[in-house]
Amino acid sequence: MQDLRLWVHKNNADTKKLLEHLGMRSKNDRSIPNPADYKITIFDVQRERICRPMTTGTEGDLVSNVAICGEKQNKAKSWTHRHGFTGCGYAINSSTRKRSLDVFRVQWIDASALGFCVFPMARFLDGA
Image (cartoon, rainbow, N blue to C red; front, side, top):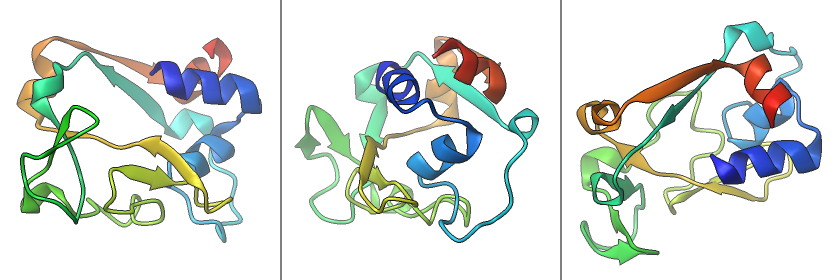
């Protein structure tokens, strides 16, 4: 969350820029998303419960102290994530085509165990 807030603050990001930075928006998409349509969910997760989606390496091997995911978790989850999905444990900004934030996967049961907080996108952007 700290990395994301810092990036938003440094780049005076709006919803469009943030979705591009996360690789969740096509560079060619001309429509401007409505911030009210998006939410940011923050989880408190123990490191050993997350993994890095990487298509190279062996399941369980550590990369920056986080295990590589198994085969099932190493794919882009939906069309909304394919723009920035690299299979290398990080996202690509769909606008600049440069490396963005590290990407992790977690099972819902593990993500929700310690609680979570949901922010409307506009509130998250205002508070960064």
